[in-house]
Structure formats: C-alpha cells, structure tokens
Image (cartoon, rainbow, N blue to C red; front, top):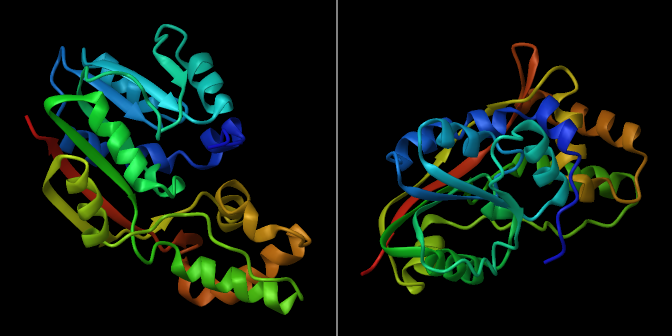
Length: 250
C-alpha cells in the first residue's frame, strides 16, 4: 500500500472529532498500567499520549509519514511512533492489545490486516476496533456521485471498505481470533463550522473532486444534502460504525 498523504495540520485543526469519538473505544479497551498496546492508525498521536499518561506501554503506527511527523512534533517526550503498513506489521506476538479507531475502512484488504493484527498479539491478546460499516456516509457519497454526473464527470470508484458485521466477523474468525462482541450503529457526527462538509470532503474524500472545480462542486453538493445533513447551524456526516472486540485464541 502506498503511504497515505494527509494534511496533518488540517486534520488536527478541523477533524479533532476523530480522536474525541475514540474515547468510548478506549474505555472499551480498558488497558491496564503496564500492558503493551499498539494503536494501529494512530494519526497525530493523541490516543498514544493518553494511554502513556495512564502508564500503559503504548506504541503508535500509521501509514502516513506526515501524521507520524505531526505526532512526534506534538509529543516529543513520547518517541513511540513509526510509519507502518497495517497489512505487514511484522512486530512479533508481543502486544496485549491492538487498538484501532477510524482506520480500517481505509485498507480494502481486511484479511491481510487482521492476519497482521493477529500476529502482533500474544495468545489471549485482544483486538478492539471501530471503523466505518455498511452504509457509512452513504448520503454524502451518493450525492457526490450525482454531482459528478451533473457536471459531466464519470462516477468514481469508492476506495473505502465498509462491511457488514457478518462479513467482518467472518474475516476476524478466519484469522484465529474469537469475536466477543461486534455491532453496527448509526453515529451522526457534527462537522467543524459552516465549512465542515467542504473540509470533510477535501480531507477524506478528495477522490470525489477529481477533475472538478472544487468550489462549484462543494456548493452543489451542499445544496443537494442540505435537507438531510444540515441541522442546528452545522453540517452532520451520516456515519455508521462497526465496533468490535475479539481475542486471540491461545
């Protein structure tokens, strides 16, 4: 997989909700002091720093060099970040838990990712993850594809992996992990400011803008989704998430 290209400063400035929504997942992880935890797709490092502050031996990896550089800049006292491919961690079975928030839908090779996670876990270690599930941002994607057609542009393939619970549980069990819990839920998510939808598309869905005039595209997209996604003075993304806990068999 090619390293992801991100604007890490823009991510921190307008998309802090990604890390903040991970707080519930951290509680589900319930890492104890002294446990070794890998944050898979650590972004700019906030969860690693929080876990380290709780005396958890946390490391962070991300496919994006710019995200890792930003994490090292923000947390110079935590030299525990590195660039890595989720499909090829090659870390050995040394972690008590692998934690991943809002990442796995970016890697459309789930069997390789889960096998890599399983190899990083000691027997009895747990895999705690949340990511986009079936139907995630369906309103945004559908409207954006319609805008492309209206502008005389071809529809574009969507790079994300949004499985059902059954599909993903089958992958996880096939890698030698036992699924303890897994569920799909709606989580409408408020975006930052009146430019929230535009910023979201430019940050996460830039492929939808390919060949288009960005400004005209965003104006048309906003018009098409306003009734569904504009509430109380803010844009809301129509997120649907899978949350999963699995344990590596001994």
